[in-house]
Structures are given as C-alpha cells and as structure tokens.
Length: 106
Image 1 (cartoon, helix red, strand yellow):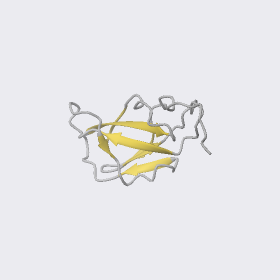
Image 2 (spheres, one colour; image 1 turned 180 degrees about the vertical axis):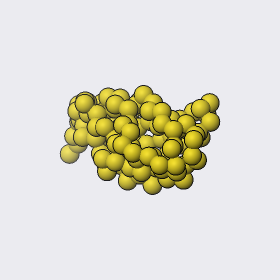
Image 3 (cartoon, helix red, strand yellow; image 1 turned 90 degrees about the horizontal axis):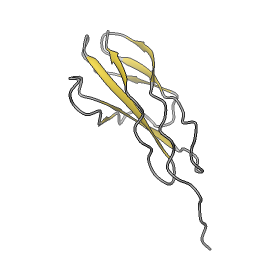
C-alpha cells in the first residue's frame, strides 16, 4: 500500500532572534515557520558565516539539536560581527534560509 502526501517544502522561517551574548557566545531563539506547507516541520538547521562579513552564511552549527527553541553559539571572537540564518526541514525537503540576523559578540 502506498500513500501520497500533498505537501511541499516549508515556508522560509523568520530570522533567528537575539536572546543574549557575551564576549565569546551568542544565544539565539529559533522562530518556527508559519506555514509547514502540509507536512510537519521535523527539525531546524542553523548556519553562520565565518565572522568576516564577506563569506557565505553556510557554516552549519552541527551541535544544535534541531528542535530546541534556543541555542547558544560558542567559540566566537569578541568584537566580531556574525551573521546567522535558520532553515526548516519537513518530510518533503528543506526551506529557503531565513533572512540574516547580524550580531556582534560582545
């Protein structure tokens, strides 16, 4: 027996929100998508840039578990500007990356 799912990839999630920071960490809140497009969002991915403001925001934050509402990014350099994005994933595929959140570790 086969099943057909009438669904698509999730909508683009809102940008991650700033919660707190210090010299070497930034805590982000992952904002859920408003439209899962017919399939439950199973997980979220988080990405950052290299902190040079010219590289792509494509470094996956692999220690993020994909389901917690917040995540503390560690090992950052004080005074450096970082860009972050999130991505929603359902059984159909991955959404577009969110728009960027830009935060200076301080």
